[in-house]
Image (cartoon, rainbow, N blue to C red; front, top):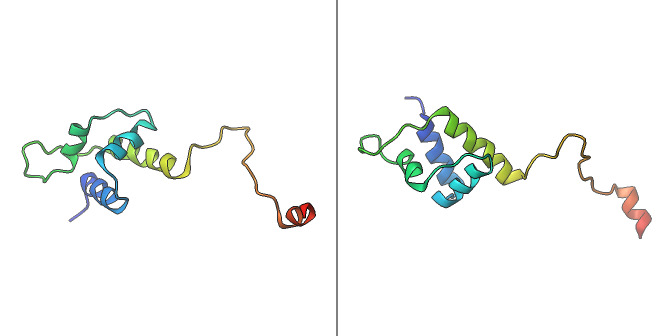
Amino acid sequence: MALTNNDIFKKLRVALKLRDDDIVKILELVDFRISKSELGAFFRNEDHPKYKNCGDQILRNFLNGLVIHLRGPMPKKGDKPKSTPSTSQRKERK
């Protein structure tokens, strides 16, 4: 039996200890709006009348938002990443 998008979404939610509010905020990081009730439909049992399949777009947006949530936004092209002083530079400061 293959995992569905709903299964993957549920497992990530449990593993990362995310509440519905957290998931809504993560999706907003990639400009994807969803209500808590819409979100709850993905986490119901398949035989529940309000169950809804989680589409590829929703899972993809959640994963993209999760990257931003955990790492922060990507630097803009042309911006130099912040570097930490090298060991020799730190010794010179002392």
